[in-house]
Image (cartoon, rainbow, N blue to C red; front, side, top):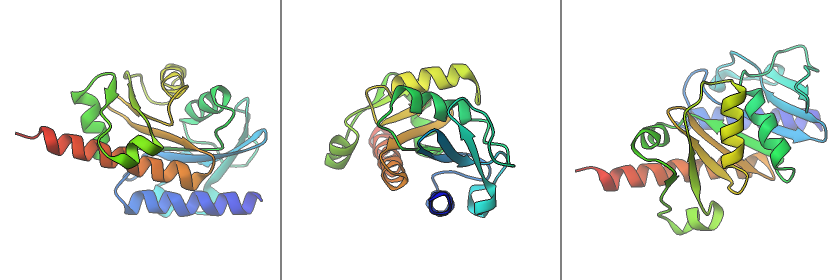
Length: 186
């Protein structure tokens, strides 16, 4: 099972980069299996990731694998703790979502029927430094009753029952941000 999970993490990491949802080192994906979390290793470029660059930690943040987890592991663990229904997380840095996070407060308006159906709402979490407990707290709180959140000046986090579901919700968030931004252009 762990090989299948690692393969999925590689597939969707490459896809995120190819679709412009993140660049270079930015972003990370994870999958929870029981008490273990499979997550991109620190310093890995999404488009070059391979199965050997998937870290494994437990729900307390203890490293199980030989590679260190992304610095955003606290964010992933905080979401998994608050949302036991969540089995996968996509944290990406899509450009329109980041731009919108500087222009809006509270929530991104829902524009499309798909976003309404699959996301419902998209709260915007206030800025906190990357990799911190503070960021993990404000973002996981925003996701308590939502499946997607935008982090001010940072990126997005989406959740799902599978990595595929979390990934495609991320695409919907970026589409919503792009449409809102295009509507607001003078």
